[in-house]
Image (cartoon, each protein chain N blue to C red):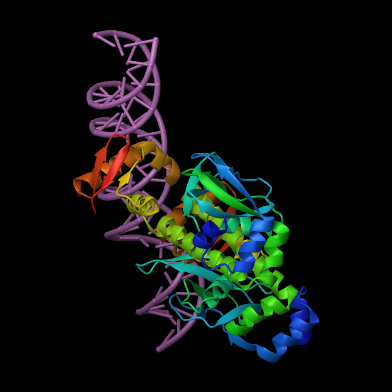
Amino acid sequence: MQDSLKKTFPTFSNELIQDIQNNASIQSFKAGDVIMRTGQYINYTMLITKGQLKVFREGENGGEFLMYYLQPGQACAVSMICASKSQTSQIMAKAVDDVELIMVPLSLMEKWMMEHRTWYEFVIFTYRIRFEELLEVVDSIAFRAMDERLEFYLKRHSDACGCKDLKLSHQDIATELNTSREVISRLLKKMEQRELVKLHRNHIELLA
Amino acid sequence: MQDSLKKTFPTFSNELIQDIQNNASIQSFKAGDVIMRTGQYINYTMLITKGQLKVFREGENGGEFLMYYLQPGQACAVSMICASKSQTSQIMAKAVDDVELIMVPLSLMEKWMMEHRTWYEFVIFTYRIRFEELLEVVDSIAFRAMDERLEFYLKRHSDACGCKDLKLSHQDIATELNTSREVISRLLKKMEQRELVKLHRNHIELLA
DNA sequence: TGACCTATGTGACAATTGTTACTGTATGCA
DNA sequence: TGCATACAGTAACAATTGTCACATAGGTCA
């Protein structure tokens, strides 16, 4: 575990890694599992060591809206923020792949801020990155119409999986953009005419 | 200054307040002044002692979108986040009233995290509050249509000024919601028919 | 008073998005 | 093989939002 930690979180000091090993537990999830629910009580900060998460905001009427991805080497800023007051989660997180997480108890999360410079910097960095990501999301919905939001969505998905072949149904996309399948089908067709994508059953090929 | 600081930031320890007095400078702005521009280099974290700010996200095509208000006793989370890497601002802030700010240099912002427990807690609290506010903003645009967004906007404005008489033109509102005046006029008329507001020239009376 | 400016009201129409309904087609499974 | 199911395409229409044009109303000031 020490080696993998060192690789995934290269900025962590040896002392911090030692502390993590001694105190934190590891939890695994299968692809598709819901890792955190809206309203759930949070006692742990989660570090991602393997796999990917998607973080959603849930609407009152059952809608869900994709905010961002979390990758190995990153942490859930919301879990940090809620943990700082043992609050309930304001978001929902789903495993994209099989996922492995390090669970750091709230008390240590705070203690380490004072004791480990590299932990402090990691936490501040996490806040910063998530805040910036959230600002980009606000942009995309405040200033852009659905066609551009769809392109933004596909690009992020492609960045996350590191490939140009997106295994997605139109319904998947519609759900995560909080719109309807027909709208997505229509816009994808237009993108195909503009030769930005090639459409197949259950997967979309990015050409750009 | 000591007394006013103690009143505005009641959680701060006496040592922290002493440190602020010795090291931070005060800056004043007039109502309507732009306090921070998108892209501006940030070296200071700003604490609000007097007046109110509005924080905007700016679009590429000149649009501006109101994210939240900042009140006395609060701090600009974006300035903290950017300051943590001496980055440029991702937002634009405008003074609503005459505003007075305490400017804390970047180096101290970090130093105090280790030295002053009450500063550490204030910073974490600030991240949390802003993150939550931002999530609410995402909600409002991801899940709600313009009529509900308008109501949300008017409510926030009313909360911020602490009154039911909003000195706003339709154009002001349209700009901050990134839509057009006609749309706002139309929706306000409907709200008037539903007896939620009473419309006057240059100001809107909330009835609810 | 009259010229002028800003704010608001409103009708007409366009564009986008949401909804309903129905079609066909690939896929897996009994 | 045939059936059930999930996925995709699309037409038709509704609702919302954006845009243009123009009218009117209130206020300022020379």
